Length: 160
Image (cartoon, rainbow, N blue to C red):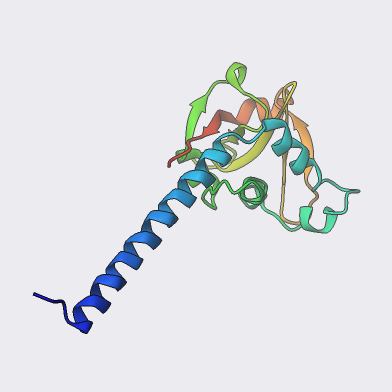
């Protein structure tokens, strides 16, 4: 039996939809694969552009802590949530001695969970936005304030 024109159109649309879904799936897998292989030094170098004196200076003064980390990771097509608590939940918990450049560092400055976040840059230092009206800066994990409030390091969980 021959298919009617209507049936041919429906079959064609279904095949097209399947092809688009397959292509989208491949693209997302490719992006996640690339994101998982970003050089951690590139993350740190990009984050440092937001410090006072760089051409990103104006942007570096308009971020809260989690907005800053989200913007840095987003540049590398790594999607992380907006708040420090949500970012904390998306990471694999790490002790200080397991941190690598580009990992997130979380602090409990108020409440019982993560309330501040920055990016570990090596040598016990991290870069962060201390306040929406202040510039992005580098601080030390060994500074008494941050040592007292350190909660955990965190490595982003890449989910394909």
